[in-house]
Length: 606
Image (cartoon, rainbow, N blue to C red; front, top):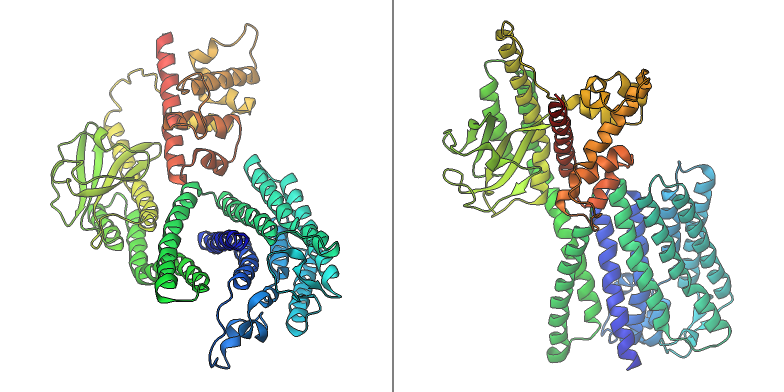
């Protein structure tokens, strides 16, 4: 019973460890912290692997080739021939702690100076020495009893206790790095993640005094206790570093983490069932569980990396052509070839993502104008612009729009300043039913470039229209310029700036001035109060929202967090679990709403 429990726990620990190690590095492959954390987790996984091989050793190989020991570089030849508890001597935890120490050093603010470099180098030197000593001679410990279920089953060597003290030293140094980083963190979210990483490091460090007490006092403690400590530490470190890297890169990862965990759990379950059938029916050694599950996790995590690499190789030419066309489009705004270049840019976008068709629609008052089309007729669309309003890229179901757009599966809104000026609709990809996340990310840059070019063209047309109306007396409208509102929000705590802005001339601001308040600072304070009241009107209800807040709270949370609380954009995105594109579009719509609120209040005063 004890052996079965230990096998199950160590097996689950190995699965979680290998998955988290690959997850961290595949989500942030360009960050050294991710690579160090991944290697540290995989090094800890060697301890679980030791336990599994010791509890369920593979049968001795028959006529083993000379190169077989190369596959097990840290295990002695006795492990391959005799098995049993000798497998415990194969993998040490020294690389894990020094790699993690290096990762925590990189989390510290400031550059890697000479003193930090010496500490990191000394850690790697100590780990290398520990591995060399273990491989050459058993000066650290030996396994006389061969019973891996208890910590005191080993026979400590002359270097065993100095080795444990060395592990404890680098654990303490890692804790110091993390808590110093948390103390100097710029915001609450990174500080929280660093504290979680510190707690995980402390959990992993508890294995050292546990082993020390058990061996020194010959006290029987089950090995599964160390496994549980390390399993909790691995889970917290894996999630914590992935979360920390996401915050530093300004992206979100919680849904991706859960989806990937569920997908990997299903993969592990399928492979475990297949391996169990092979062991039960065909007599395959039970050690096959270990090898199969490690390879399954690694190969499934490499699928996305391989696909992205191949996509970058094959799509590089398409991306280069697309960017050249967009640059040409931007340089020829207002010229006669503008419509031709719009068609060319849309064609390049569709070919880059392998779209079956694409159409660019421009909003003109209450009508829609077809500006460009690819693989479909350039015909007028009878629908209303409100049918195509969106804050961010949307995946739509076929048949959501009537002909000729019934086969559209992706809608990309294009914005000029704070207003949506049009939309691009794409048919399904040539060889798929929907677009991948990478394809959608690839569309963001071209859509912004198209929006800028179209907005510049519309602005020139508006200038021409205004020139023809110079002789017409202007009508009095109480419309607040969106740009003025945005500038006021960006300088919300600068009363001098607010007092000199055009918003200070509004009657709704003048009504807030006390008699005798004539300075520009007094006017700025009144503008500040007016802006705060307008933002508060965006609040859907009095009760605070849940965490995460529902979608209707996004405009209020973004403006209140960005301008009143002065929170970082990535901190707000992480709180709302939204992408950068959604954040920017929601912020633009919210500022436009504040401008409209101010204009409506100003109109009501007259």
